[in-house]
Structures are given as C-alpha cells and as structure tokens.
Image (cartoon, rainbow, N blue to C red; front, side, top):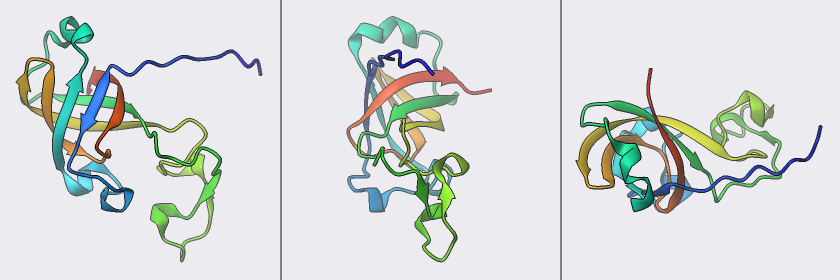
Length: 132
C-alpha cells in the first residue's frame, strides 16, 4: 500500500456538555446529548438548505483516542473477550474518525444546536452530510 498523505482540515468544532470520556454514551442514541456544532465562518455557504428537524450525519476526529490500540473489550466491558477495533465502535483505532446521526434543533448563523451527540467538548468537526 502506498503511503500517500491524506490531509483533513476541520470545518469547525463540537461544543458538548461532555468533558471527560467516561461521561460519553457509547452511542449518541443512548444519551441523546444536546450540544452545538460551531462551523467556521469560511463554510457558511455550505450550510444552505439545512434546517431544524433535519437529521444529519456528522463526521468528527476523535482527537483524544489511542491510535495505537488495535484490540479492545467491547463497550469497555472487561468481562467480554477482546475484539479487533474494526469489529467494534471503539473510539480507539488507527484513524479515529467517528460518524453519528444527529438532529438539528436550531440554527444560529454558523452554529447548529443538535441532539444525539456522543462527542466530547472541543472535538474537531470534519464534515456534515444529510442523513438518508
């Protein structure tokens, strides 16, 4: 496999009440945490067409993940056997990109209030896409 560099540039930041990984639900649907997607003003035009009530996929970078970890106990439960990270939803993985479906509750300029987050406060936001 060639080692071509891939560059990702965050489009914004996630603001969440979750400050510590132990507070985060294992899935956004389990906690329905509300927070804000703060999109950089440079991407303001890309928000055209988004509206409250719409479900979107957000992709974000798990900047506090252990990228060297290749096996984990599912859901952090040590009574469960180890599995490779590709067979789990663990945040710890070689390329810690996360995806979550959230619902837009409100839009204020380039800030979107959403429900369904499982991301920590300050997490880099990579992209927003309409959910199917």
